[in-house]
Image 1: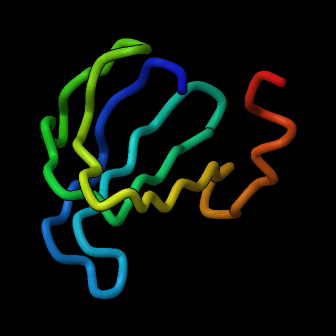
Image 2 (image 1 turned 90 degrees about the horizontal axis):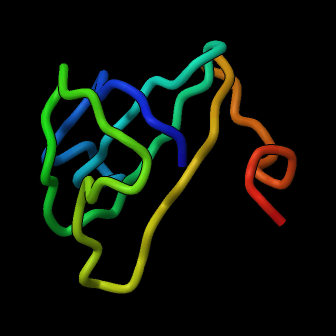
Length: 79
């Protein structure tokens, strides 16, 4: 996804496990969970394409949110 700033990182967020939230422009945030290893920390500015985590178990939970409201990724991701 787009460049942004890491605003949240947790190593054990209940059923979500290791979780990251990155804040982007226009109030958009992306959430990544079920990660096996987090490579960044809150406050880091991440450029698009920078590795942020490892997902070795083959599972990834991904959300796009505007504010705190989940969005349909169809309208945000390239087709």
